[in-house]
Length: 267
Image (cartoon, rainbow, N blue to C red; front, side):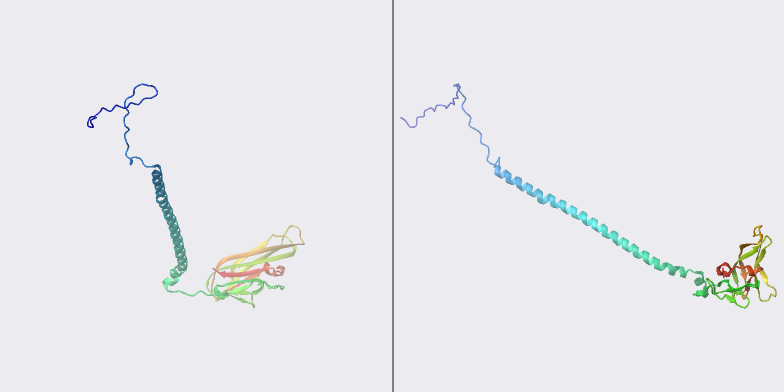
């Protein structure tokens, strides 16, 4: 047998259970090994991607939240600083205002500043109450120290004649009140209440105020009855004027200090 002699190689046929002839089987095409990754390699890369998400996205969000907190704290601190500064400025303004008012006063502007007099003698005034003794003279006597009685600002009480003497010329408010009790009151009962002044250079007294009270009792007689009279007015007085109070029925005055009083003060 010649070794170079070729013999035809019979074709191979696949026979299934049907017994029919089949076409020759085609060899399967091979897929490169790098087209698909092994399952364990795909899982490893997916895990790396998730790890990157955890390390990248969440730290950014945390940084953003931290910056927001810093902005809030900064705003609060700035607000507290502004409030503190406004309080200090308000305190300084309160301290400066009295100085400004004193500097703008007319006395300092014109240069005729006089210090205020302190104490009880700063303003001419007086208030005296009725004495608890039998009054026989129509010109009443007073007590400058009983109860609320006082004298101030150069006003003096003259014990010898019951006058209040002023030592400054000016406008004064003068007032007097008397209260009388008539034990045997009748429709004819009446009395006069007046305030007058004695002035240097005038021999006769000058009437300032007067009240005539009558008809205050009921028709039935022989009953006690109490009535009062009040006089008050603004009057121009001169230096060394002496002011008096007269009552036509001094024996009927109530013996209560606060029921009868007399006073004045400079306006």
